[in-house]
Image: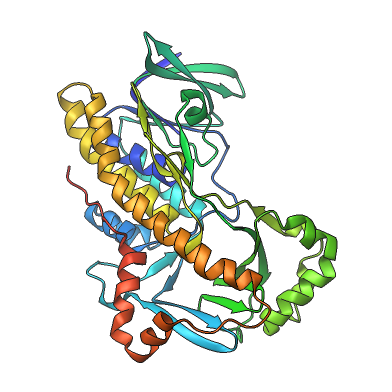
Length: 399
């Protein structure tokens, strides 16, 4: 058994950022991460301008950007054979006017390294949170499983940041509201050649939506399918799947055989949901544990980081003086409720109006009026750039 002031369950973006910020504020914190390292493919790799603004406010941006990454200054989409630019980040009022495409393991390793600079920071790898310790109806710690056996981490406050399949959220009995998701995503990687297009693109065509993300020496690709449609894709066969990729992205014709088996294609089951209430006495949920986001816009990591910053802004001064109250936990949710709900509302609207229409379509979709206006008046691209790059309520370091 060990004890601390705050136990954070989950070493994803929300948990690692909150651990760093608490330790920086002098609050003793233990972060539990169930894996031995952060090296996993096909996790959210987009670091948005608002997140880099937080890094700047911490004095870490230059060091952060020394890690391997690609910079995306504009975002666009191919509809049929026509390209439409959607967002231009050049005018954002931020230090970094681009999206950094950085493998998430580099991002999390960076946060871990910075956290270890503080005596109050303790990261336990290969420690999976499996249950809650309660006394008199109040959460007072976490039960975890490690290679050396079970451990108990006693804490004044438990933060559940253990992802969209949160064990602690389920154990706590918190109610989840499902917002619906009409799609799933097949992730894969294909090698990149110097003659390939350089932009990050979405390709919309008859019944298909295909996304390619430039990762330097390879493409991270997303093939969108209807919800629960994986059996149909497998039934058609791998050769048919490869042929469909070539139809959507002809430059892959000489390397689509890199998808040798279905093991090279990973299924992401898309979920869009959120908790009605993020806390119970002694515990707060943040990040995907509080609200699973659609991959639309790639904003999930950004919202998780904003949750962590908002939580730290409340918890650090409060815990320097004493204990965080239930009212403090409610205040964190209240602060983050609007951007969470509004962002999900936009995502669901795009899913229902655009993605579902494309997946059901028999012909190439026609560009909607908003896209045509963005091409005619380039200055309008600042608005989707601001929403995508900064979010609806950017958070800033206060302590």
